[in-house]
Image (cartoon, rainbow, N blue to C red):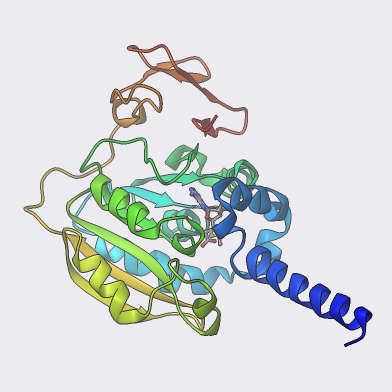
Amino acid sequence: MMPWLWVLIGLVLLAAVLYWQLVIAEGSYLGPRVVALLYDWAAPAYERIKGFNTETEQWFLGLPLAMALERIPAPFVLDVGTGTGRLPRALLFQPGFRGHVVGVDRSRRMLAQAAQLVCPQAHRITLIWQDARTLPFPDNTFDAVTALEMLEFTPDPRAVLSEMVRVLRPGGVLLVTNRVGREALLLPGRAFPRPKFITLLSELPLEHIQTQYWQVDYDLVWARKKGRPVGGGVRPLAEVLRCPDCGQTGMEKVPQAYRCTRCGRVCLVAPDGVVEMQK
Ligand SMILES: C[S@@+](CC[C@H](N)C(=O)[O-])C[C@H]1O[C@@H](n2cnc3c(N)ncnc32)[C@H](O)[C@@H]1O
C-alpha cells in the first residue's frame, strides 16, 4: 500500500479516537481533571448547547421530585454534578417546594454559571466546588440525592452511587440518570444496560427502584433508601460540612469561609457564593 494511505488511515483513526474520548466520553477515561477541564471550557456555552426548556424541566423533573418530597416541610436536597444548576432551578421554582438545595460539581466554571442562573433563589441554594467521589457530608444527611447526566463521566459510577446513597437518609429519594441509546455502547464501565443498572442499584441499600424512559440518551431512575425514615429537613451547612482534609463533621462559619476547628483547613466562600473545597 502507498505510504500516504497509511498516514491517512492513521489520521482517521486518531480523529475517531479523539472524538470518542473527548466528545462522546467527555474525557471520562482520561480522568476527572480532564472532565473538569472540558466542562470549564464548555461552561459559558453549556445552556445554549443543551437548549433546556423551562416548562419541560419543571414538569418532568421539578414537579415529580417536589411531589416525592411533599411530606417533608423543608426538604434538604443534594444535586451531584449540578453543572449550571439545572435540577436546583427546576425544583426551587416549584411553588410547593420550601427546602434548600446543595449543588456539588468538579467544574468551577460550571458552578459560576449556576451561581448566575440561580441568582433570584440564591438564599435557597449552596454551590460547592468538590469532586463527587468524596461527598463532604456525614451519613444520612439529605432527603433527596440526585445526579443527572453525570455518573457516566466519573471513573467509577458504582463508587459515586454508593457515596450518594451513604449521604441519603433512610426513606430518602434517589434520582439518577442512566445513559442509554447507541452512544452508551461506547462507554463501557460508565453506562450500563437497563437490567445491569437495576442490579447495580439493588446491591445498595435501596428499594422501590423504578426506571422511567426520559430522553433518547437517558433514563431517569428513582429509588428510596432502605430503613425506617428518621428526621428530615434542612440543616445548617456549617453543621453538616465535612472537612476535606481531616474528615471532621461540622465546620465553623467565619467571614467568607468555613474553617475546620480540628485541623484548621479553610474553605473559602468565593464572591459568587461558591464554597471552594476542591484544591
Ligand atoms: C452533562 S453535565 C450535567 C450537569 C447537570 N446535572 C445537568 O443535567 O445539566 C455533567 C456534570 O458533571 C460534572 N462532573 C463530572 N465528573 C464529576 C465529578 N467527578 N465530580 C463532580 N462533578 C463531576 C461535570 O463537571 C458537569 O458539570
